[in-house]
Structures are given as structure tokens and as C-alpha cells.
Image (cartoon, rainbow, N blue to C red; front, side, top):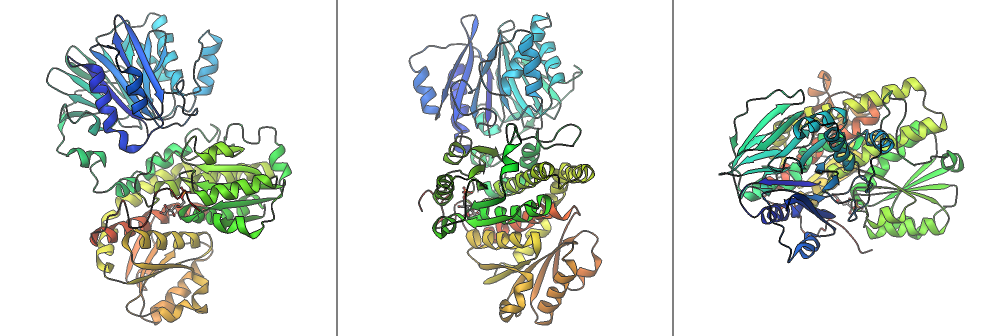
Length: 609
Ligand code: F6R
């Protein structure tokens, strides 16, 4: 995720900005930049790479000024480069931005036609040009920003500077956090409180659709109509480490909780306004690729492999194209049947997993077309694939993958709809229905996240168990695997995921009072069968924790504990089931006192085979 810092006050501005950016460093980023009002104009310095590169670039310069903005970038639109790094400048405006502008292409077109020249591939630059456009129409700075925001669709946290009003700093927020810090005779802006916690503990937390105008030693909040909104500052009690984790005890918990946001960002801009199309800019633009392929191979490792298993189910259901899902290290050594009629889809959070990359290279050698699903722009996977679809989960710091997984599921759902439309298998009405459910998903996830206390209670109850079984059927079977993997890797409790139908072929022998069994029992085509499996476990005194659809009264009498999830189409149920399982693993690991964010023997990115 990108980070923003802004400063207006008597200190040495560059020092404050660099200090703030350094405090955001732990989240990972690919480029950084600052803009300072110096010597009558805005000076911008940007550099691809670590903050050190920017530090070296400005070392020895005396960029004095009382106002400035800074940014660390985690690339979404446009690869990491000096030109794509923020701040972006247009005329007398400089902007830093977090988020995604959905309608940037149409805005860019209009602005280009009216003479604006763009210097980057980013969506952000459109904001700078839009504000500049209104300034040129003689609107004052504040009004120009307000008018520009009226044209923008999407998510943003912004900080804007203007050469014409150098004593002013403007911030704005929509679906991406922004805070205003009120110091002693100084004002700050930040996407995250840790960036400026050294200077103040008094903050105004902007709400969606609000702007903050910082000048004359005070900060005013206004809505997009220009109406002033009285807002009392709040005192933040977090210490800097807690603040980095957004007040959560661990990054993993923060990352679980932010999944509704991560999924909103991942969907954003990928659905046409009339909900009839999935937009993956440039993918199969001539319609030849989908026509040419006769099979799809999904390849990944670990948690990402579980996403691949869900993907197989989704693509086969929605497109009727044969799909295989393989583990990276297996695919490569089994002389796979791959040729130019194969679309190889690799899935990886990091884009650096050695086994996945080796599979990609092997498939390329055999002539396959390649598509990557990845969370890191400019990773090896994205550079080596013909096309990459990015999950906009933001940096994942906890070693156990959480938000990267759920966003991968969402991309696979979108990809299935995209392919289904092209193969003609999905009707217009179905498309409308599937997209409608997808759009509701973040709200449903928020509901699930709100139920965390009950999951914590269940976690506490079973924390002494030595073994766990996770059962699921159909599209939920990979989620049973994923639930078991999460539990083993962070709580060190032995757990196995199984297709529920396989129970009687062996694992049933393990069932007794000591064996908690997590059963994924949402209402879908497999419900009756799963209920039979529940009876089987019940009859052998197994302790059942069921994940069931809200309103299912029958199940409660058969099991020891139930976690309810809101109903949706069965193809999206895996996303909703994932969160309670992540939380269950998290709470159990935390009760055991484990190092949740850095479990023993594990690395975030496995770059060796
Ligand atoms: C489990 C986990 C790992 C990764 C696997 C692949 O929580 O994080 O199993 O999923 O190492 O990593 P990526 O997705 O980066 O290729």
C-alpha cells in the first residue's frame, strides 16, 4: 500500500517528510518521492527503489520550505519507475495519491484532447491535471480541488500542493484513510498515523467524501459541496509499534480485518458500468487468445495453490473449459501436457516463488500462453508472463497469507466471468446476477469480520486440541485445505483438510472426543451430503464446529459450535468461509503465545526450489 505524508510548519520540511516515509517503510514499497515549495516553486524529487535511493538523490541539496508532501508507492497502475513515482506535477499543482481512480482513462482522454500532456502511466497524474485544469479556469486552489474530486470515481487519499497558494496544503479522502495531525504551530497529513506520531498525538480522522484544508495554523474539514464540517480532534494513545499495526496486536489480524477493503480495491474498475463486462485492459483484446486455447493449467504453491483449486472449479463451472490445477514443484517434473493451446495461469502473492516461476518457464518453453495472478507489480512472475492481473491486496506482512488469498479468489471469479462471456457460456442475465453478488461481497465480509468475538471464544475452547480435521465438499473443499494449512502454520497444531466424501475411506478412524472437526456446511448442492457426514462424526462422538449459512436452524442441534456466514451464490461462498477459518487459526495461535506474524521455519517468499 502506498503511504502519504504532508507537512506545513516551521521545521525543516524535507526532514519531516523523510522521517515519515521511513516510518512507513516496513510495509514495503517500490518507489518514493517528495515535493517541497522552495524558492517560489514546487520542487519534486522522486526515485524508484528504496528510500535510500531518494535520500542519496537529495543529499547535499538545500530544499528548504515550509510546506511539502511525500509518498511511498506500491505500484498499481504503471510499473515502478522514476516517472511513475509520486508526487505528480501538472502546471502549478503537485499531488500524491493512494487508491485507484476508476475512470482515469476517460478523464485522461478528455484532458489530453484539451492540451494536457501526461508524463507517467499512472492514474494519479489525472488528478494533478484535473486540478490544474480548474485552476486555469480561474478557480481558487480549494475550489479547483473540490471540482476535480467531483469528476473522479474511485478510491483516494490525496495530498495536494499549489504554487499559487504556497501556504496551503489540501488533503481529501474517499475509501482510503487519511488523517490530519494537529501539532504545536504545525500541521501534518498522513495516510497512517505512525508516519507522524513523533510530532503529534492529536488527529482528525477524515471520513469518506471529506477534504481538509490546512493553512494559517488551522485545519478545516469540508464536504465536497464546500460546506464546513465541525470536527473535534481525537487523541491517539497507540505506541508507534501498535500504530503500525493499525492498533491490532499482529499484522496478520490487521490483514484479516482489512479484507473487505482489499476486495473492494481488487474489484474496482474491473466491472463495466452496465455490469455486462469484466474489464482486464488488454487481455485478449483481439479475441484470438480465448479462441485458440483448449485447456487451462493453474499452477501455484501453498495457499495460492488452494486458490488454484477453487479456480479450477470456477472456470469449469462458468466456462466449460477443461482445467487442471497443479502444485508448482509437481507440475514441472511430470512432463506436463502443455502446448500452444494451453493457457497457463500462475498464482502467487509474491511473484517470486521459485517453484511457480520454474513451472512458468517450463510452460513457456513448451509454447503455452501465460497469465499471472500476482500481488506484486514488477515481480519476476509479472515480468515473465504474457499478461498479469494484479490483486490489489496491498503489502502482506504477516507470513501466513490471508488477504492475498481472498483477493486471488476474487480475481479467479472475475477471470471466470471474463472467459465465460467470451466462450458464450454465461448469459447476460447470469452475468448480471454474478456481478451483483460480487459487488455485495465486501459488505458480507464486513458482517463476517464483525463476528470475530464468537470465533475468538471458539478458538479459546479448542486451543488444547492436538489434531484437527477440516471437511468440505465441492468448491469448499480447497477451503478446508486452506483452513487446515492456516492452523498448522501458525498454531503448530496438526490439521488435515479432506473432501468430506472421503471420510469413510479412512479418516473416520481418527474420530473420537479428542478430535475437533471443522465442517464447511453452507447451503448449496452438497448440503445434504455434508449433513450426512456431520451425522457420521456425531455418531462417533467427534466434536463438530460447523460453518453454516445464516438461518440454518437444523444444524445447531447436531454440532457443538456454529459460525454463521451470510448467504451468497455458492461460487462466492469460499471467500466468506475463508475469513472465519483465518480468524480461528489466528486466535488459537495467539492463545498459545506463538509468534503469529513470523511462524517458526517459514519465510514470506520461498525463492528456492
Ligand atoms: C501460507 C503461505 C504459503 C504461500 C506459498 C506461495 O500461508 O503463505 O503457503 O502461499 O509459499 O507463495 P506465493 O503466493 O508468494 O507464491
